[in-house]
Length: 297
Image (cartoon, rainbow, N blue to C red):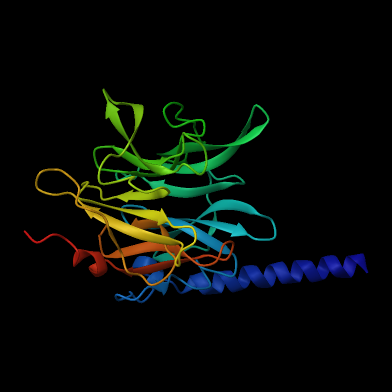
């Protein structure tokens, strides 16, 4: 009986693998060959990226040839950074990223395509703490994960986004989980030294987090959590004005739960996470929804 069960399990695994391979074998072109969305959000790559598991927090490489995202199997309660890439004109089957172990999430590729940032959990002094990690791109793929140290860790930053000149925008969790705010780390003499909270007009309410910054720092999109309201999680946008100050943030009217934003490097699409806790999917929508909000010159 045990042998029969093992054989049946192997058959099911093979069928699942073949099914996934069949789904990706015909995917060509930008964005996994998916039909671009309009101003109404749509699930991105259903059955391939967005499945019956919990997917959240995606990013693309600057050349658009790689997609990284987080997947959690609700039964295992483990997060893994997954990826798919365009190889010989065809998108590969999503697999665990080379640098990613259990409980890794929120990937972000730097604008120069040379570094991937992500989050993980580490046990320190008997406690499971949040750490920001990175890996460098090499001729043979990604390096082993590295700890950037201060001012990122331990338990100080979460969800990395960065500009062309290397300035990092992040969620400041230095006060502990539940105190999330928007933060920034600038390079000083080529090094990251100080984590600072963003000033006015940001952080005027609690639980502002998950910033995505435009590579040229012309606008920022971030998550605002609103316990007790519906939707609980929404996205806001603010633009850099002529005086190099920020405009008052305004909500993006997506009519659904939304968090962990990412805008494609071509500026055409906003990606975000939506869905029930543990049953999320990745959505995308045309960037026209916020282009229309830009202040008139």
